[in-house]
Length: 305
Image (tube, rainbow, N blue to C red; front, side, top):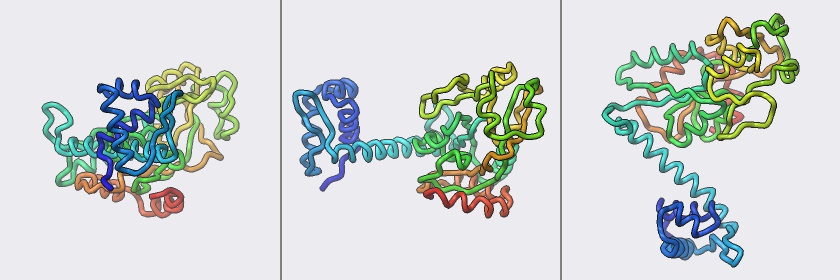
């Protein structure tokens, strides 16, 4: 049995997502008859029925559901491989011509550690340019999976390390970031329950997978917007303790006594053979005290690696 090629997978995924041959053909920029024939050839080659066609439209069979899931993953992996390959050769930006690495990081976290890592890596023989890509809540996973990033600083237990290789770098507590004039800002510590429902100060909401969770808090798109709204007394946020580095005089950080510890990992695709990436990872682990890695190891083992 011949495996489907990327063109066939792209055709099938379009039909499976649209559940309509006409709309899928329009999306693909082709006529409907050749698309129908391509799907029929794919079914014959695989020896399975992928789609049920009737007067009401198109429906996926059980086998079709499997191929939709696997096909999306295969197309994403192919696109990621192409992005990383072009970036490694410096071919992804007009006129650049130099290889580089993209490191995805959560905005407002681990500033000091990131600065030390970038400085130490730049001094390594054969170091390449590192582009730091700030992102929102849990976006590092998507950027790493689809090839827009080569490595990411991830924060367990909030980010999933499933499918990645990773090394723990630091462990820290969490803080509530409040307007400096708020009554709770004078407290020596707070609990998670106390900051979950502060009258007039709802927690900020970050997008995840392109959508915002329901709630009264403002929808936040970037760190600067968040900083302004906290200073104006419109919202609050919970961050790892290292976020103190970006606080304004109009902010106050209060430790959370019962919040879980946050462990920052450097994560990368499990199949990577990039020498510049290997050097970046080695530099990061060299900067990390061994005791931190030993402490974080039980947490790392809770994820598929």
